Image (cartoon, rainbow, N blue to C red):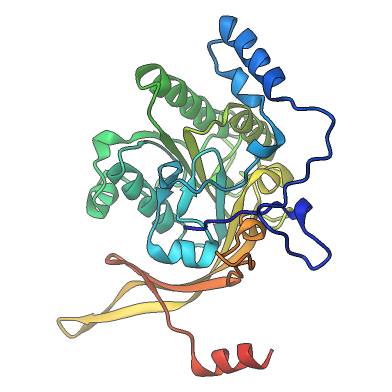
Length: 331
């Protein structure tokens, strides 16, 4: 675990600062003021809005407590700086088909279930079913699923499940997976029965933008959100649309851009069959990176991408080629 965390605003001219060097220039100490506000709000507020009040020292972009994460494989922390998908945050992975996006979604769902968390799965592509969950080791009866390509229906179902989950289990934690964001169509397109060619995947960007805004408003420490998308670019074309526009990218804490490097083929009964894909996940955005420091106060530097082999057996890191390592040393 990262034992030290330094806010960038506390950096000295050398770019570093001691953890003990907390500035004390304010004429105010708001501790008692905040306590009074919380007590006042808690009397007539049952939605926990009092939690939004705090001191500057409570602002922390990354938790150090494993209980605040859906803990992912060990390589997740090595490449992204944190042990998994954090509750209260949004993680996005975007990319073309067969680049490991749904595999990541299923892996997150499996680990969430193993760690005792609830799951809402919004599936818009009609490609992942009950059998896929069972094959992955996920108990399908422990997943609240919404299968629709219509954006309005997807959000309505997701928020109904969200609200009911916390009515039934107020002290539990929840993972919401939206797979995929860019594949949704608007209710208007669906109602007038437009042809498939006329329906623009991600054409419901306005609805998605409103949906992401509502997610942010409802987002709490007990909810983690993983969103699968088509592309990180704000402007796309049919089949390659960043649904939700800038709002989704703005609010995402970690954004991965996926690209296929090749296929994983195996021979069974003398017949070559496709077993998976080799992919590269680029880190397009990582708000955690600037806050990670080692025990000596040195900033932890994270890789810009990870190469993976993804098959039914899971994720495996691909070793870098010798010429790539030599190039890094030269730089």
